Image 1 (cartoon, one colour):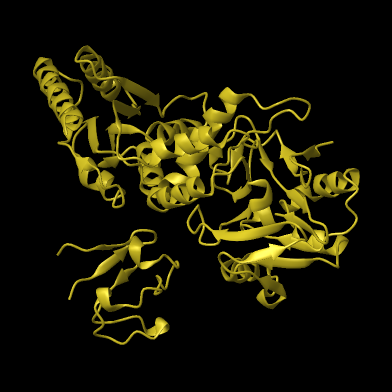
Image 2 (image 1 turned 120 degrees about the horizontal axis):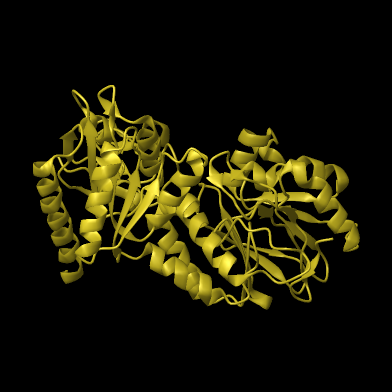
Length: 54
Length: 400
């Protein structure tokens, strides 16, 4: 599954890890994150994330 | 000394710091700065927007006394960076009846930066209005302009926008006369470069939001008030746009003149091809490096290309060029192209070491041109070709 990087702080959302602090289980694709999910490091909204081209 | 009436209900009474030389010990502030603070008086309640930095509390208290403000109901914190919030506790000591008001992010950060318990902050949510009686302040968060906590407040009844750091400038205009507009525009540009440019994507959204509010007056956290907001909104719209000027920014550092010889020759060739070049010396012994680096960063707000001219020192970039690279990586200028030229003595890994410092600058990297020692006839031909290549790259942009 695709990883996404936060344009603001560089945090990488990896679906294989999820976001434990935000109660996101491993296996959740970026597109399936709740719309009000924000970057756990800096609080940027989903729209400030970019797809990491592998 | 410094109380100004903005409308029937709004006063400006912040602190002035005309002698400040560098903001954050980094950004040159040749015109000093101000830490703005405003009072809004409704029929029932009095609100103060933004305490100032702790060193400036006496100016704020003296201005409040001069304005006859002896009671405050709400102290609104728009941004918790210490230049705006540092005097919060001192202000609360003078006005113990006041409630501290902020967003959840402001409350979180007040605890982090000033050790004020978040539980002591009266929370306000996006689009919520703090009623002052006949007037209200509506909360408009503007995350990443330039911290996660920045918040604007909108006084709809008078169409006055309190914009926090957005639309600010480091310019302490004399108290007895109007701000000089040329200086206000110049310092707005450098302020944008150093504070807002890293978040141009987020700032673009906040500018669109501001347009939709259509304010009559904008009161920023630093510098003079905007009585004609279209001026600053148009500037910001040009800064956040995709369009870049066909121009080369050329920072130069040279130890024994070989790199400088290359840089001057290339600049002359480019100018001959119709491409404007701004040379910035990073090696002027009479200037603090921060002044030159600040000018480079400001020049990259709307320039399409940057060519770094730097010699190799101990196989890497000259540390002055390295410092500039760290600056560029932090401020993320919207350059289309970036390039590196320079002279080396016996061996160089400058290209890798330089670009390793620039992971966040997404500009296309043009070929690096390194010359051993002083340029020869053949090297000058390489520089001729290089100028032609840069010209073609830049011209292709205007054809897009």
